[in-house]
Picture 1 (cartoon, rainbow, N blue to C red):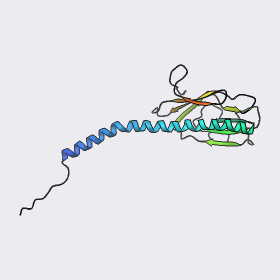
Picture 2 (picture 1 turned 120 degrees about the vertical axis):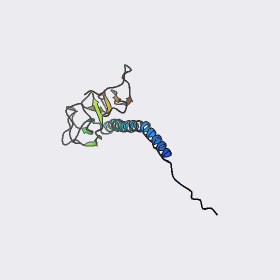
Picture 3 (picture 1 turned 30 degrees about the vertical axis):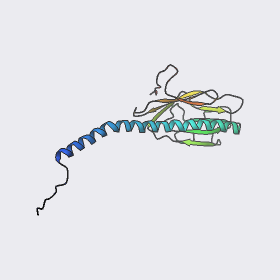
Length: 179
């Protein structure tokens, strides 16, 4: 009886072809996966502020007070600029004057700290929502991916305090983040 040994394994040619194919698939797939992750990250930031505006509208009606959303890095006080990239706070404004300044005795309803990978710029220093008598502050908040992998989008707040998300300006052009 002959004793034949069976040789198992891959030839060098098969190994090189498999590695080449795997490299090709990774090269084509990873950039689009990075874009997908960046888009999801940006959408998360937009959604957080979108829901906070809805909460501010509800709280202003329920409390019969002005509720303000403003940029904040420390979660306590409003920043004096229009850069929202560090985060924002939602607070009940007891006074009718200086709605973009939070006093120590005013209640912070929510603090959101961003992940730092997005550039968020508004055309307002703050948004004040009023449940009764006066209308809300309108404006636009533009969200951009710092690595420019995701498409920019904007959160547009109407005079009634209703937010909507859009990717194009009224002129049909994409939004851009100011430097």
